[in-house]
Image (tube, rainbow, N blue to C red; front, top):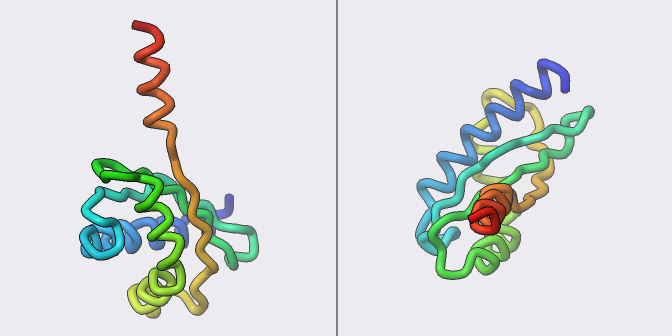
Length: 110
């Protein structure tokens, strides 16, 4: 990843973290959503965003709600980074379940 890609990824990660904190009730249904990683495409048109979801009643439902709100999230992100980026990339969300996977392996080892 180039330096420019990393800088943009860090800006997006920071701003989305703030967004998910502010909208924990409306979009995240009370669950804590954190952005674990952002990867940018070489042409900076696509941002792959990996989310970790904790404490929700139904984490799949929370993820579906985030997917349904993708246009709204992109608009809010563009407002937050309008002085730093010319064009807001298309957002692709993925679940980062590495923590769940690690927990499952730890239980199996016991």
